[in-house]
Length: 72
Image 1 (cartoon, rainbow, N blue to C red):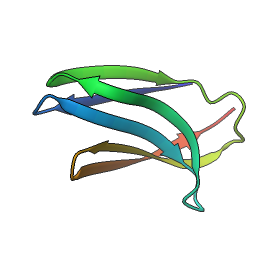
Image 2 (image 1 turned 30 degrees about the horizontal axis):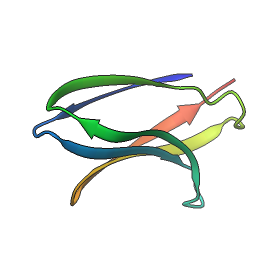
Image 3 (image 1 turned 30 degrees about the vertical axis):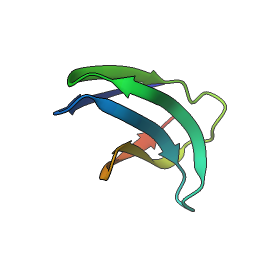
Image 4 (image 1 turned 180 degrees about the vertical axis):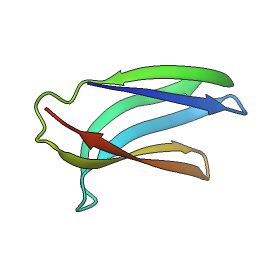
């Protein structure tokens, strides 16, 4: 599992997803409304192979991407 922490400057609808190196979405971690402030999620990725993934947070037109290394 991987702990994901992010901060929002505005209230709004967010999508938090994980993508493989081919750009394919492999998991939707959270979708829904979030208030501004600090948020924490745990990504349970036990069914995915070891490798590099990209965690993308989208809120409206804003997109943040973080690289994550999953090791088992």
